[in-house]
Length: 215
Ligand code: SAH
Image (cartoon, rainbow, N blue to C red; front, side):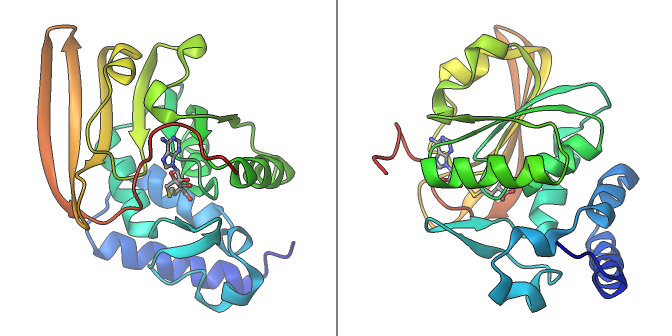
């Protein structure tokens, strides 16, 4: 698992390109500058690891575009020490960004093979992310409540279970929609009966599915 000067140089360029697209939170840019994204992709895609594009990671799933990771993280408004629940672990890259920012990360994935592969790989990099296998619509009640919840698959709606697992004052970010294109939304839970919803434009994600896969 080599992280060469060449990789580091490519990463710097990626960071500058994301900055150029409007991301200004330095702790997000620092995290992207640190994490060896090329190790998260199949070796045949190594040359493209630091392009600002999404990529296949096996089991029919994708690692999100770096800009999208940065954008979701920015509007999630994460601080050091926050307890964050991520739905859709995928490659584990987004979870590493959150941990680099000082968050305590819980991440759930419904594809068993991907869950196993990611859990093993991420711990080999030295991250302490807690990975779970299951349906993210149900959240992880045993570790609730969370300061932040981040959904990284296209969700038709936000389940009540997830909203209940958000602390008062907590925020949830998700791409909402059933078609090819979703709307990025942020929900701020002021209290149980005072919920603010904001829209942040169009994005494309793989769908969030109900229940566990039978793989
Ligand atoms: N955050 C990931 C990218 C996620 S792609 C990364 O950084 O690489 C979306 C992921 O959500 C896929 O891995 C998909 O299997 C998963 N997913 C889809 N529906 C889900 C559900 N109901 N619960 C948990 N994970 C789900």
